Length: 510
Image (cartoon, rainbow, N blue to C red; front, side, top):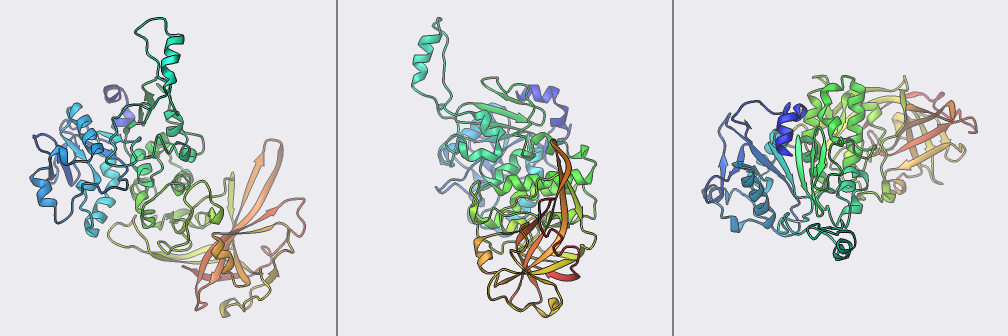
């Protein structure tokens, strides 16, 4: 597989240099050339072919590098000291005749915030430049190993006796499909027992950025590169990495340069965010850093002055504000409470899903006046504990309780309506806690409209959408607590609600 890719897949080579000495090495790698494995600090411009490892850390303590142990790691590490998964990955690397391997727990100094920020900022380069990414897809932890016996069933012997007349034919029944696990990321939780690596959010970025990965699944090895997929049973051989039709696919990410349309790039980014929102993290504060490598790659193809704002792109910011949370009813992925690991207007503060409609038209009264974020550390694509958007748009106060609060002074002249008089207006709160904290009155800011035309009906189906806001304690700023939708259809009564008549206000959202 590797040789065929080297010789025939030009798309898999474009991210890497043609230098015979290999790629620029990461800052630290494990050198496998001696009897003992050594952690080395590379020199500027040093080149070589290296393997990157995608793995689950698991619940047991892994072998790591810290400031206290880095000198020891550079003197040498006995293979027997390493977790079984690392030992297996090293055996594969040596079997391929390669000298270097990059393993995050050993090549990034743990418990060192500055080093972690520096290395997470170049994660895109680490995985893009690797000669091969080894994905220990079957292992839920570092001590399990990834080269164990294949999953099968005892009935395999009965099937072999029944269908094979020759003595040298063996049959092994697959317990669960490795093909489905790798091609249906939106349903990956159905394969937790045979592919526990894939629901990890960090791994999504790693397998997307690496030009080629080999997955050590519980059933078989599966190859996935920018051009094709292959597997030991050969069913996938020659098939493009086209996924399930819903998710962002590896080949689309590999061909970002071909997406000359900025609108297409923004749309693909929203799909990536939806994919990652369904995946797990040990620390919720890593939600943005786990995408920083992909954000860095997208920035190469977007206008140079377009800023990245807590997981959203400035060039389509108003549209990107209209994400929907899974809220307290989320079942397809991790259910999260709102934590201020990102501004309330960013999807990174919760789960994200956008309207899957065909066309979008922003309301002409909606204007982004300014936007800024507070970056924690050196990585501008990393953790963002806070931020602010100043926006103008049509707004209405909606009374949702029996004891509505008085509006803040800056909204004293905003029109007020009673919730429930319009059968087409739906308030979708981000969490159940947000719904209970509304305080009797919420403020609906109009952003834009979506239209979709179905095959059976050429009449466009339109819906207005915007943000549900609540004032902060001081009343001068607002927080997002949800997204509202109003369907504009022939069957809707009182569809001319407030979006045409409401006055324009300027608010600051944090």
